[in-house]
Image (cartoon, rainbow, N blue to C red; front, top):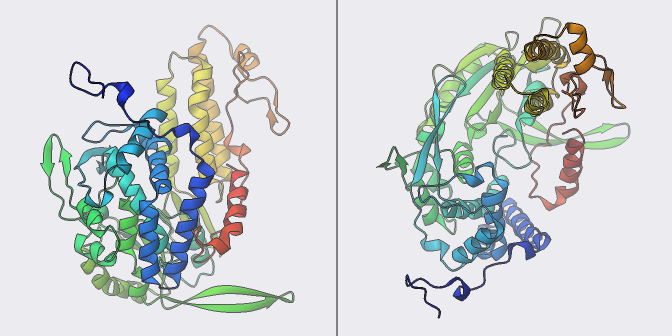
Length: 502
C-alpha cells in the first residue's frame, strides 16, 4: 500500500469506485419497479410475510441503493443542500464513491445524525420549519420509502391525494367538484391540523409500521433530533418536513379518516349504449377530500357537519393532533371556499365553478412585481427570461379550471407593466418608437398579434397566459396506483396526455 507523507492512502491505492456513467439504468429501474409491484400485489392480498420478504430483498439490492443515490444527489431540488456534516455529492465520481461507501456499511445498524433546522416563510407571514438530514441519511430514507410506499399504496384511502405517486392537487380539486356539482353535499368543514408534521405521535406511527424489516432504523430517524442555531434538540413527536421519508410517514399516520366518519365503498355496474361500465360508489353520511394535512368534509346538512367534529375526536386524539381554530371553518357551498389555491363555489344559477382564488392571484401579482423591480437597469431579454417560467407555471396550474377571463386580465396587467418598464428603459424615446421596436407583428404559426413583447436582438418573446388552452382535468380513478402492474397502460396514457400540455 502506498502511504502519503500525511499517513493517508494515496489516490492510486484507493479501490475503484462504481463507474456512474456505465450504470445500466434501464436494468436498475426494471429491477426496482418489479419488486415494488410485487410488494403492492402482496399487500393487496394481505400476505404480510411475502411483503416483508420482498421489502428486505429490495432494501438489500444495489439497484435500490443506486437509484436512491441518484434521486438524492441529482434529481431532487435539494441535491446541493448540506446536512450538519457538510457533505454533498455533486458529480459522478462522488456519487460512485458514495454508493461504494454505503454498500460497505450495514444499513441495519446505521445511526442517523440530527437534522439541520431551517425556516422558510409561509403565505400567512409565519415560518415553516424544515429538517434537513445528511446526504447519507437521505439515501437510507429514500431506500426505506421505496420499500414501504408500495405496501401502503395498497391500503391508502382513495380520497387522499397529497404526497402520493400518480396523484396531484388537481385530482383533489376534481373530486371536490364532483362532490358539490349536484348540490346535495352542500355543507363543508374546512379542516387543518395545527402544526401537523411537528406534533404527530411517534408511538402511533410506529404502531402502524410494526413488523417493517428496518423498523428500528425508522424509529431512530424519528428520534434523531435536530440542530437549531448550533444547539441540539430532541424530537419526542412529529415527522419534520424536509426528509424524504416524512411525507409517507405523515400519510400513514393520517390514514383512517374515512373509517372514522363511516365512509365505505361498493362496486356497481351500469349499462350504457349496450356496454357495461364498472364504477365505485361512496356510501355514508359524509364525503372527504384530503391533501396532506389539509382536508375537507362534506355533509348534506349543518347538523351532520357539526357532528363530524365529535366523530373525528378519537381519530385526532390517538394521533396527537388538534384542529387549528383559525383555519377550521364551516361553510355553505353557495359562499364558496378556497383549497390548494382555487376557489370552489356553487353559484345562484345552479352551476358549480372552480376558479383561481383571490389569494393565489394576489401572490402571482406580487411575484410579477418583484421580478420587474429586480430587473430595473437590465435589458429586455433578462426580463423575458425571468417572467416566462413564472407565467407558464402559473397558467399550467390554473388551466384545468375556469380561468380564461383571469388569463386575459393578467395579460393586460403584464402588458401595462412591460410598457412602463420600456418607458423607463428608454426615457428619451416616444411611444411609437417603443411600439415599433418591441411590439412588431408576431406570428409563430399558432399565436399572433401586434402587442407581444419581443426582444429585437434575440426574437425571444414574452408568453401570454391566454395562449394556454383550458383543458378539463380527468381525475385519477378511485384507488388506482402506479405500483399496480395491471394499470401500467392506464398510467402510461395518463402521463403521455399530460406531457402534451406541460
